[in-house]
Image (cartoon, rainbow, N blue to C red):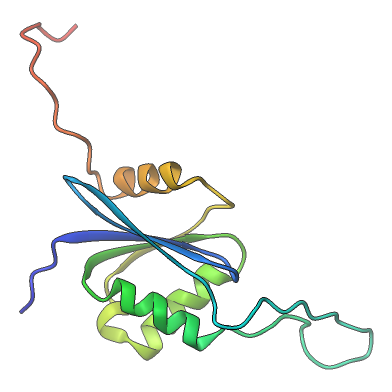
Length: 136
């Protein structure tokens, strides 16, 4: 059995994915973009379909590859992209999908905010430094 050393958090929408592998010594970032430019579909009254582009499977595969070594995965994002990724991982890559610990809404946080959310979620507080003072 492989031992996984990193937690991973991915924030994504339909235009990009920002993936952070987080350990006690810091975080590494990977930024990915879909192979196809974002399409805006206009839904006309009386036409079939939801008016939304379907998920880009090549993009989801790229995200999957970046998450392959993660022991625990937190997925963040606005709207449906986060749930599309979770569904894709659980259905197409169940060995990775079973490592998803949470899927949560997050509009457009900064990189620093994404890492902070992940550290709180994974309870990765920095070690306390002894000050020699009694707790107050």
